[in-house]
Amino acid sequence: EDQVTQSPEALRLQEGESSSLNCSYTVSGLRGLFWYRQDPGKGPEFLFTLYSAGEEKEKERLKATLTKKESFLHITAPKPEDSATYLCAVQAGSEKLVFGKGTKLTVNP
Amino acid sequence: ETGVTQSPTHLIKTRGQQVTLRCSSQSGHNTVSWYQQALGQGPQFIFQYYREEENGRGNFPPRFSGLQFPNYSSELNVNALELDDSALYLCASSPAQGIDTQYFGPGTRLTVL
Image (tube, rainbow over all chains, first blue to last red; front, side):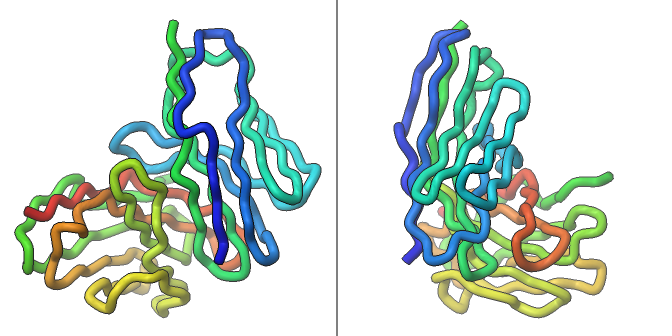
């Protein structure tokens, strides 16, 4: 069964303090790995899609990387507005996305 | 370009009732997926519709059913509501089947009393 585990569950950072979120996965035949940002009570907002090991994508202060077993979301010099829950999802041999439980990030000013 | 929209925003029902949630997909998208997100959990896949046909289903009982219309909008119907059905229901659309990013709507918060 496809599985996604995200760590840590929660992370508190000071503004400007860089860190990384982890997403480890077990799937049969990865077709794509997705990162989303979710604000409280809202729908997930798409950030990145990664398709193969070694791939990297960047957007503002965020950078996503992918290996054969895990993905990292690196946050450089975060700001309070980066506070949100970050969700990782994988797509394997079917149409559905399998999500992790997310990492709740809080950035203090 | 209009994004994914869902209605209603919030809904309160009592146990045993039936509910219909609605979703309009993003312009140009013909595939719609529905997810249930309980508090503190990641979204769980309910089912997907492609060109008005169900195209994959998660581990949800038959009282969860859906429809997709010719304009690619979609409905999620839940019969015989249970307390555990209280959750945020998310609709996502994508341009086609296969490896395509799914774009989510704002969700419908369902509370079952």
